[in-house]
Picture 1 (cartoon, rainbow, N blue to C red):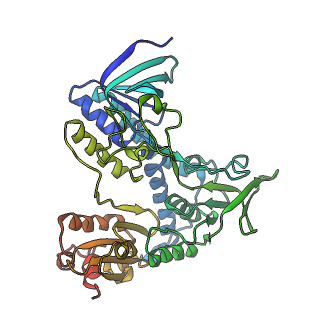
Picture 2 (cartoon, one colour):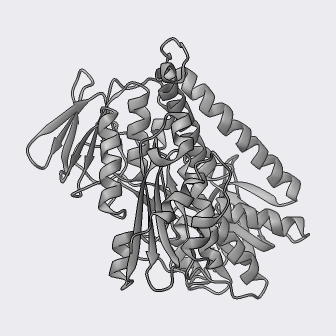
Picture 3 (cartoon, one colour):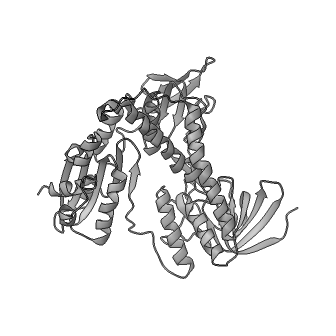
Amino acid sequence: MTGSTEDFDLLVVGGGKAGKTLAMDWARSGRSVAMVERGMIGGTCINVACIPTKALVASARAVRRLRRADELGLASPPPQVSAESLLRHKAGVVDGMVALNHKQFLDSGMDFVLGQARFTAPRTVEVALDGGGTRVLRGAQTVVNTGTRPFVPPIPGLADAGALTSNSLLDLERLPRRLVVVGGGVVGLEFAQMFASFGSEVSLVEAGPRLLPREDEDIARAVAGFLAADGIRVLTGASVASVRRDAGGEVTVALSDGTSLTGDDVLVATGREPVTADLGLDAAGVRTDRAGFVVVDEHLATTAPGTWAAGDVAGSPQFTHVSLDDYRILKQNLAGGSRSTRDRLIPYTIFLTPELARVGLTEAQAREAGHQVRVASLPVAAIPRARTMRETEGLWKAVVDAGTDRILGVSLLGPEAGEAVTTVQTAMLAGLPSTALRDMIINHPTMTEGLNLLFGALQD
């Protein structure tokens, strides 16, 4: 039998980065807060996304370095890779962060509720508790922060073949000898290179004409070259028609062009879908779009009064650092402010080896937007630090407005690119001309020092 309604100053449904940070913030200030989470304490990033995958990326990079130890004047036996040791490493990182998050939730004073929430009225949810029973919670202010999950397309035979997703692959108890990756986006590329480093024979299928369609063609071509050098077979312009696993366990992936691939496992990396189907958002007066994402305005307000949404489920760019900024927006707007998601300068990094980091516009995007541009390209081999590390492959590229000398964007493909891009982002936010980075005194030898060279190479 459902109990009476419990009222809170703030109700958060889903404990992703934005929601959990806001919930702890309000609870620490003395307000009553309830946060409902289905089961991933700390959110997707900590449990099945950024943190575990980057922990395994670190393992893959270590394997690659050990295999090249002789280049650094060292003698090292071939590294031994096992699924058991990788899972132990990943679990050690994840379990520690989950425990820390759980402690922070409790220490904040919030009412942390594990269970499945469903809206039954505006700002009101009924929660089927993990331990049995139900609770009915209502918030004076309510935030939907349920995130996304891997999208599995309706390809014939895919489910019956036991296809893996980015979630389930993280718990694989063996390393596949042959892995077929379906999807050439960020997740597909990171996992393809990771498992190639671990010794799997990897094939990657992308339906589009090339990898990374949002990047300039020269950058995407360079990335494809790195994958090929790692032994990854990349097939573009081919979609998957069907998947079948035979009695012996072999998987056959039939392609639209009539060819096929075989492997021991298939990973589906074709994007993510919002977790909204079972939330009962209609009862809350919250509208979703055709894909199921919560419709919000630039202030993250939904179509229902007193109800907000944040993070991936709100259609925000799917990065944890964006979800953290959504928290900042909500914090200010719930206090009566008017902070907006418009014109945010959002960087991102694809954690390949070497990394691809970008902020701002590509050359193609800048030209399409009507800018007259100056473009600079720099081979990573020109940066002294890259030579000391013997990691000289890669390409840096900058796009600058020809009239104002303002930096429109950079694409940095090379080691430690995710660190160096922040300097450019800071200059862009400050409105500095490209000459500021060209002439800035930067620590030597660092990868960021390459910005002197990059902006010094601008073409008129």
